[in-house]
Length: 214
Ligand code: SF4
Image (cartoon, rainbow, N blue to C red):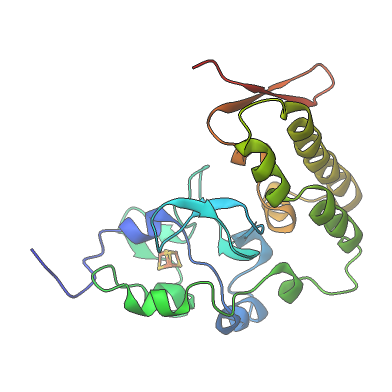
């Protein structure tokens, strides 16, 4: 059966909120979208691609609407009546997405997207921590190490503990809540490890990476 209109099944919104584009900046400026609604996807972070429908490294830093309850279901999706809580102000990708014809979405995907630099003021005192994080906790490096069959666990362990320690520092210095942490730093890097790697905590709260038994 074919169709050419939205049936409000909710599938698109459950797969994840949209990535934001320059055109969506007015939603941020008008406080329809606030930091608590946003999550940063860092460059090369493994993420669901609406083009391939696979998990792939993000080609550049992206800002996305957050999910709810540990899922990627868009936080504005209202499950009880399967509607959008900001329908008249929904971002560009939501307006472009037609599941029966993805051509419009394909034309804009990853084009003119927002990053943290568009949203965080240049004089915000959190920037030195974000710069340190970007330099010492790169997904490109983590992905390279994780692709090796074995022997890289110590280096991966260092990266994911650096990631945790800079977050802890920011939480202490700026009293961030969880939603703000996810915007400023993205999700913790140990959560993006490939399935064959796992972590265990030590008594001081640091993590150690190891290969799972197959
Ligand atoms: S903003 Fe609205 S239309 Fe877009 S994914 Fe979220 S709930 Fe769906």
